[in-house]
Length: 341
Image (cartoon, helix red, strand yellow):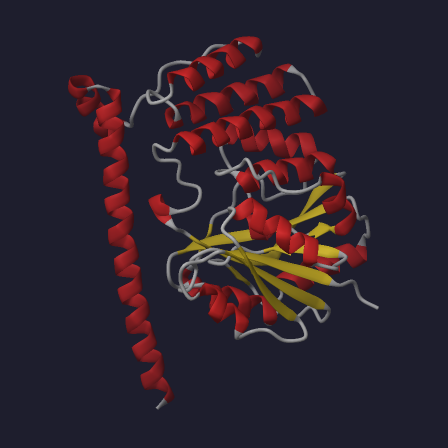
């Protein structure tokens, strides 16, 4: 009998996208699968939409709002699979994503190996997703994967992974303190516990870019800043537990420097902790700067104001691109309907 794969979908106020996510899970060509949707106390129609899919393979449950990590843990507690596929409620899996990764497992079985795959970004049209390879798109040892992640500021999206139940159980639950970067911290633990990462290039998923309002957005939330810095400290601990060398410490320094703008100047206490951590690594942090485009604003108005203007401009550009993509999607839909007539 083929292994059972559990596809776990946490959802919160995702009425505009959850149906597409669940449909992509249902349509997986891998024959033995179960799908668990956990609604995290949504205030919209997310739960009602999810319940339309309930069947022998699909269950949909709800809980009071507790955050993404708690919803993921709830989903994990209900599943029976030999392998775990995570899927956020606004993302989409290619129909053969799981089947391609399971083919790799059948070819060289090792429950402590971690499977990853390619991911592309889209706004409204998965068919227009852009797949841009990063240095993590490769077969890597755990320490090399973490070095590249920290030193090059790259990551793998949540739904790229396929994780055995043995590895999942060894890692433990998602950390509910993580109001931001919960997936980054969790999968760093999974990588840490694994024997290595096998990259399956044809196992694709589609990541819906949410922009400044997404779960990963920090903004000025004190709790999110504290959660992010906790995640950063844990990342540094994880990589140094594998290898404490000049190259791993250099990667940690780059990682700290890249994360500094998230806390400066709103949280001087966290900035001071980051500087102390950098000194313990044998380096030092420099004050953050905006891009060259906003250098004049920084010179005359200071870094905080320039940074805010830069972020507002980015948000405005993203909003314009999203509206344009939505309009093109509408036009594509009309053209498709006309072609069917």
